[in-house]
Image (cartoon, rainbow, N blue to C red; front, side, top):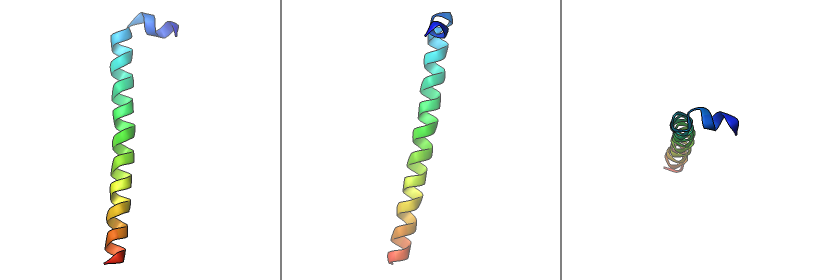
Length: 42
């Protein structure tokens, strides 16, 4: 937790960016999977 005191705003922005990237990847993967399943069902 000591690293947070160095530049908390920078760390928060970096963590927020990383979290957003992860969620975006999950969302894209889930969306692609759903689209693929719908195409298979068609």
